[in-house]
Image (cartoon, rainbow, N blue to C red; front, side, top):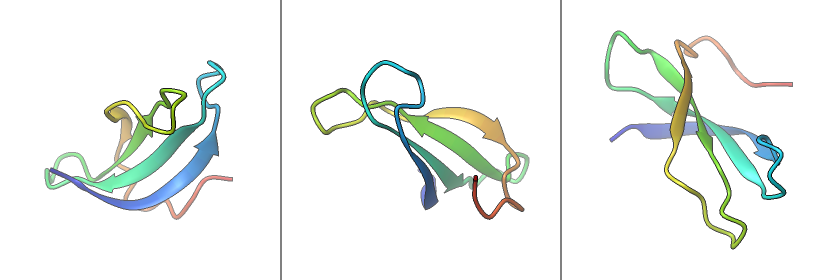
Length: 64
């Protein structure tokens, strides 16, 4: 399992009315580097399993 380096954004990213999280995970696979992962909110304070949005985020310190 990958560890989360940081939560980079919180908000309704997929426009369904529920808060979501974007996080950078530290992938253990050398060919992935760090990955940007989306956790969509269920609307009850919990989140669905993460879905990889992009690989290779090792050099990114944050989103603005």
